[in-house]
Length: 355
Ligand SMILES: *[C@@H]1O[C@H](CO)[C@@H](O)[C@H](O)[C@H]1NC(C)=O
Ligand SMILES: *[C@@H]1O[C@H](CO)[C@@H](O)[C@H](O)[C@H]1NC(C)=O
Ligand SMILES: *[C@@H]1O[C@H](CO)[C@@H](O)[C@H](O)[C@H]1NC(C)=O
Ligand SMILES: *[C@@H]1O[C@H](CO)[C@@H](O)[C@H](O)[C@H]1NC(C)=O
Ligand SMILES: [Ca+2]
Ligand SMILES: [Ca+2]
Image 1 (tube, helix red, strand yellow):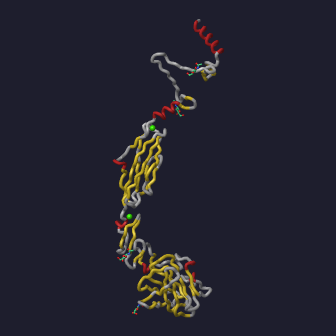
Image 2: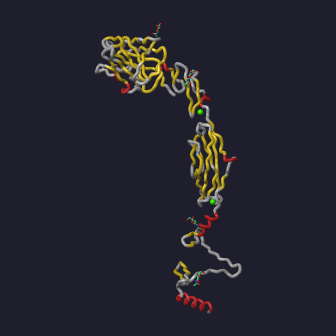
Image 3: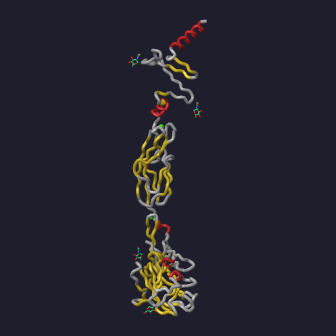
C-alpha cells in the first residue's frame, strides 16, 4: 500500500519537473533549471562518489574522454634496455653487416615509435622506426658515429638515449686480390692493384698482350662510331675495318689512315691486321697513338718509327707487339706501302688504365 503511494507521488513529481529528472528510454537525463547548478554530493563523512562506466564505456566531461585522459596522465614513459656502458653498440669492420635492436620497454605495453633526434648513423645503416632495428652495412672507414634516439609511446611519453657505433676500415688487400705479383693498396670498400708488366685489369687478371679491346667483327666492343678513317674508298668504310669483317677497310693512298678510338686511356701492347682482300692489302704500316685525338706520336723502336709488316692474306692475322706499351685512347694505322689499295682489318690489344 505504501509502495503504491510512493510510486504515484514519484510519477506526479516527474510529470511536473520533467526537466529535472527525465527518462527517455533507454536514456536517463538529470537537468538543473535555468541558472541552476547540478551538485552530486556524497554523505557528509567519508562518503565516496562512484561513476561506473561498464564494459567499454567511458566518462566524458565536455567532449573529453576522462578515462583516456587519466590513462595518458598515468602512462609512464618507455625505458631503454641499454646493453652496454655509454650506449656503445659495438665495433664493425668495413662492409660488415649491422643488425642491432634498440630495445625499450613501455610500462603500459603499448606500441612505440623510434626516431633519431640528434647525430648521424653510419652511412649505409638505417633505423626501422616501428621496431627500433638498426640494419645495413658498416662503412669502410675508421670512425665513431654517435646518435640520439627517442622512443615514444602511444601517449606521447618518451625517453631519449645516446648510442654509438664504431667502424673500422677493412684492409681489402688481406685477401691478396692482385694476381701476377701486382702490388695491392687498400682503399675505401676497395683495393687498387699496381700490376707488373704485362698484366692489367683491376686484379691484374689480364695479360694485356693478348687482351683485345674488341674491334674484331665477332666482338664489336668498339662500336662503329669509334672507327674512323681518312680517305676511305667509298665502299670500304672504317666501320668495316674490323678483324674478320668480310669486307674490310680500304684507303686510297699513303695519306689514308684507319683510326680506332678505344674510348678510354689504355695501355696498348700490340696490334694485329689482316689484308682487305687477296688483291688489296697493306704491305707495311706505321702505328701512331694519342691520348687526346689531336696530337699523335709514332710507335717507335729507339728513335725511329716502327715499320710493321701487314698481312697479305685475307685470313691470316699478323700480330705485332710493341717494344714498350704505350698509353693511348686513339690508335692510327698509317699505310706505307700497299698492293692495289691500302686496305686492312685490325684489332688492338691492351688493358684499360684504372685509377
Ligand atoms: C551555482 O553555482 C555558482 C558557483 O558556485 C553560484 O555562484 C551560483 O549562485 C549557483 N547558483 C545557484 C542558483 O545556486
Ligand atoms: C570492448 O571493445 C572491444 C573491441 O571493440 C571488444 O573486443 C571487447 O569485447 C569489448 N569489451 C567489453 C567488456 O565490452
Ligand atoms: C707502381 O709500382 C712501380 C714499381 O714499384 C712504381 O714505380 C710506381 O710508382 C707504382 N705506381 C703507383 C701508381 O703506385
Ligand atoms: C729495333 O732496332 C734495332 C736496332 O736498330 C734492331 O736491331 C731491332 O731488330 C729492332 N727491333 C724491331 C722489333 O724492329
Ligand atoms: Ca607509457
Ligand atoms: Ca679499405
